[in-house]
Length: 616
Image (cartoon, rainbow, N blue to C red; front, side):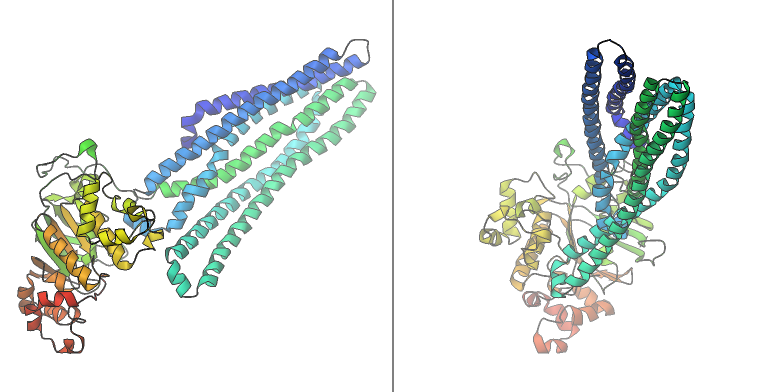
């Protein structure tokens, strides 16, 4: 908690000081009232006392209002700083951490959990400090007036305060569970809106609504439980004061009758007793807010302990780099840093996603010089897509090395490594926003001529002309207003606009029709003359275009060569070429197509093979 409070301790101290001044003016009011009662029996004027009382009330209220504003403003600053820190950290999480954690729950840490910091880091601190000091000052004043009545008051307060302390941990537990339930609500809604068409097509609205409502009901149940215990704590304050008042009134009346104290002393003591409600309430409020805030802080700390990517360079920062031909101004990672095509090599790489899961790669080794196109083929689950994840350092290898330009990717500065790479994912995600925003996502400084050029190359120019607002058209959540093929072309255009030295295409044309697939195949072929292109493919048209083909099976590289070489030398590739690659190329006669004809008719088959098998 102090970590969030520390940068704002000056403002909190100011708010506390103003609150204490306001409290001090309140402490003077019972003394003024005592003086007023004493003067009522004589001929002295009471006008001055009344003016003084009025001034104390107005001044105390004004000062406390300013102090409250300072604290509320500081509280909002605490929440803002916590959100900035948490957002920056969550967006740097390792991919594996995000895959193990529900995104909706992470979002609730940034929204609802940080909101609870508002009270605990300012109000509870000031309430505890000012309430404690005011409580002590009031007790001292009451003790100076009559120690006997003070003993009666403290006896009642200690008795009821002990009972209140028992409910505080219950408030913390109930609040934490309520916040966890809020995270479940966010997770359920994120899941529903993430597959909204599937939800409606499956008629699952009622089932998903029931799941969200169940989480909301759970949050309500724990929220009510927290409110119940907080109400017990708050009502105990009033109970303590009321019981104390009755005890003081009875015993004090007896002491007035016996002549031990004056009537004015009893009146002033009773006023101090009622004034004691405020500091005691502040202490109870501080304790309650601390219990609520500690539950939120525990969840924020959990998120902060998730592993993030290292953005700085590795231990061998002086490792060899290609000589730059164009410098990136101001260190921008989106600007083309080198004109030389990158080389890629896997050196006996082993990898598994977690220690309790089986290995995905078992000693994978291959070399890809640049430029040119290299295709990765193999059955589902062979580890083809994982190759791209390791190059991008989404995951760290378990053993061996992944080399880019002869340097281990772990020794590259992460921003520099990814600035050299263009990546088109298997599902070609499109972000909510305009088409222009999506194109510029990886290259925000791209010029209009560059955008127009990439639209033509990605066969998006006709799509843009058809859209009502052109590049400013909003594409919807996850590109819902675009077709699957259009989303793939947007993803390809986005990668090309980045001007990468290494282009990774993971089934990048799987949803394109034959005409657009053929056109984009030519674009990729043109790009591969200057850039190193790695492609995971199941279409023969793409495979036969490659300069080399890496055949993977069960997490190993079983063969590397050209299409013709592999058809003749590798049985698995021959089977893939005769069945998987050509399964939809020639209608009923496909089953009669021989392996040999696959080698000789690859290019001619390209335009008529629109289907693909999704990669693992």
